[in-house]
Length: 263
Length: 277
Image (cartoon, rainbow over all chains, first blue to last red; front, side, top):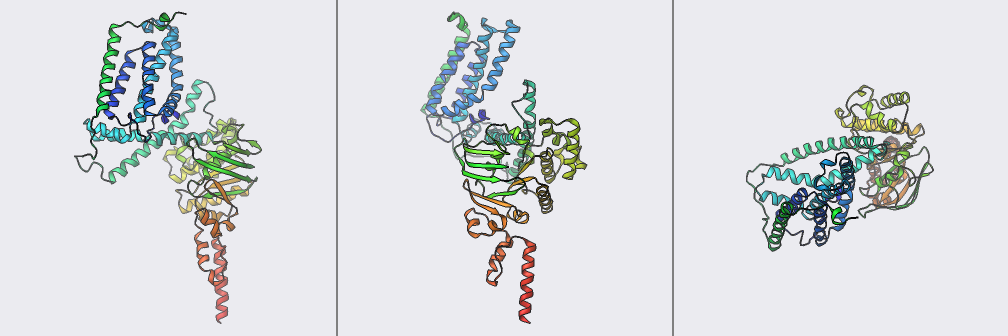
């Protein structure tokens, strides 16, 4: 469950934490777009390392590393699949890379996505997030659903741990068997988790309704988000970054790494 | 059966939950582990089947150190029934639910069928054999969870908060059931807040506070000792409180059992009416 740890917000203050969440989201979005438009290893490596200063300034390196470690399982999975299919149908590989390099690039793309979202969630409090959504004119029902989902991630993670313990105590060995068996080992964990999440959501809905949720149509906020200098700077950085990424994509042929550094 | 040797345990979050706990549970004993929320009760019993491994010290379950074997291997001997049955029920039928652990332990199909039938019968669930566990009431779900553990006949059964969410009748059935299990030689460990329930069962009580064992002995001695109960922030059974209030009359203050209380009061009334005559 360590992957969830990487998305759990802790109340600390740093220049990154104080940024406007809307601007931070823009930044994450730019990284996301950049990671999706590039499939070469070199730009993805650049994207990966470019975010490390952010992590250090925010002082969340420990949790950030943990989220990356948590993402390792899926990354290995992606790597193996891409390598496998790269070998059976080399025609699907873009940019003339070797299957190995391509597999590396695809796994790294995933890591970049995890990394940027992890930075966003590690440095943005759920309250800030809902403010940002609300003040971007997203209907309150959606805002509320979204922030509740984020807020319940740690609760669900804890519950998943309890369920795992309960099933282990009944002799379930998660790490046993071949790949398919291992996937099936998770059924006794997922079903109770889903059932209890549904039950919990019904209870939450009832509790909210009995406390008058949605009674008044118009809502006002105590806090209003305001852009500051740092925010404007990050917007500028993000835009420059996006423009550069698009420029490089369309006007700058990127050779595979193996041709830059021949063996 | 279970030997806890000077065990310390710290959670990854840095919370020190056990600070030097030593405890020896003998074969066939009935033990209630009591204490406030956060005293370390559940952390302690999770050491018994290896769900948590000691940070320092050692736990031996049936002579085997929990460090060296998997939870699944230990579970064969030490059955653990979790507090909330919804954390483990997942099958389409009650029968399948009970078979789950037996399949994990590699029981043969004929033995498995027999054991499932036995467990269903034991907990009065035979009529729900083909019912979905999700359709059952809270108390019934709890019984399914219990049956799913008892089915493989572990030597030790740990019950985490067995009385929570049970009505009076269910509790009474549960009490009789536990006492009966224990009488058949099974080692039973319960973790509970329910002082009245413990007073009625009268097991050996291990009282915990702040990650340490503060008292260990029979229920009567511990639940009636005002100093001990105060230290572990538990409240004596109501009957004990009443007798403490009546101490002026020269009645004993170490009463936890209702029928014993009735006898003492009747004797007292008789004696005083004889005096008046």
